[in-house]
Length: 141
Ligand SMILES: [Ca+2]
Ligand SMILES: [Ca+2]
Image (cartoon, rainbow, N blue to C red; front, side):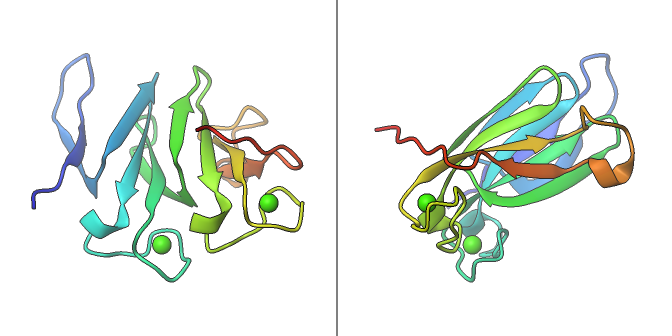
């Protein structure tokens, strides 16, 4: 089996950057590239820390900082917004049976948002925040 690997290239020219990560879905806006890495294609690495290697885990690359961040959350699907926000859908059962929407069960798909740059400020501490949308769950069939 061959793996699909994420590479990025600035539209203004320059060298390719091989992120060294498998990816099966990619979305980009501005300088932010988001993709999901199947753990099974990344050397059976547990990227979301739930003890298995069967998940597709969201990772985000910022061309501004050349930083690759493992968001460590499974993502069924995702979209990158114009202001470096990545919205994604996490199935609680795949995220180590974590309750992500404060309802006491692990049956839901929960919308989460990753702030790749930070709309709140520019300090490193404010970047990379993952927020769950509590008490909202939705199912896409
Ligand atoms: Ca895992
Ligand atoms: Ca739940």
